[in-house]
Length: 551
Image (tube, rainbow, N blue to C red; front, side, top):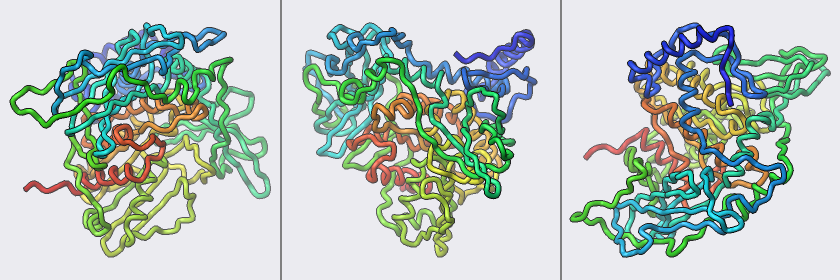
């Protein structure tokens, strides 16, 4: 559990907490986290600690938000694990079943209705589970129609779950339910981030003349007698440290790279991460797994679930993404149509390799967009491409550390918040960013603080240039192997995805919901979604830049 407590300042902190409580109570803008400025109340200088990780204290306003976010994503309690672990009492997808409701049948389904499915989990002995916390994904598909939509899963905390789907096309609709992780595996994933946030070994090369040394770097460094180099960003306060080389100074750092993975499981815990047995395994239906959806019935009220309030943001039909809650998604199928949309625009892309995919798509799809050779890494950039005739500029910059990629020049490690502060912005400026995949091994607090810094920069950008278009990419589900699960599990991504959505709610920004766009598609999940999904994502982005004109 994260603690924020300094005994000698307890009375002061209680006073500040009361002050902030009333500030929040009477300031509705704060409840939506629409930051118009920081609360300038002095805070005791006591470190926020999370086992190995030590963070500087936040302002009362940011600290309260952090607490709210952590509470809002709190996962249901998961079982503690015995020293000698057996699979017998853990969740078994082979014994588990889902049932389309109502069980007795006779229900007619129409476009516009909601379909509800009951999922019941059992252990390897075939006994019903009595608690929640399993990680489940649900989707509805008709592959012949190229149709699909993501479902909403609700944990009843007693071994049963509900999945709710919006019925959005006529014809067959096939329910798919997947166990990503049993609740017992979540216990392990929580512990790994608490006890081993340094299980990816980041390293830096320091060099001066003919002398070269390599040391370990991280947000969270284990305490030793070895001095540390503090590379904390002076503007954002983003922490980063390296053990100091023995014979060189800290300012001789040349590169940053991923030096390998070293996560350690306790005895028998690997049993909880078995592909095809209890990880990313489909759950079978008890009875039919599909329904036939009839045309919309204007004379009958739509069948709605009373357990899930929000629906999907969109769905696929004929392999084309259809938006429900955003602008109509136009189809940009030729270079000339894309060029016409981007004419006179500066498009700045920031983030990890899943955002880099969008630069690569535009660079390949537009023959007149010419990439400059900046002699940069193919993995992390930076990249720049220009269509001089149409005055189109597209740039890409990786986010600041942590960065798991191969060797990156230290001078190329830029924090998104700092980059946004350098933009003038305006009606012809498009800012796109995505930050998620490289943060899964760290305490959620680090991710929250990164997003708070980015959000402050976004707010300032929109204040000085309200016409700037800001688009944010969410995370997405991916292929999970026993190895990948310990560093990049879908559970980690799901938790951070919830934080991202809450952090930017209420701001004049737009989401590309990669989570739903991957989950709803029939293609296998992949960290880097396959080309048909990327094309649909690009169409969503371009539809924000060039919305369909009202007739």
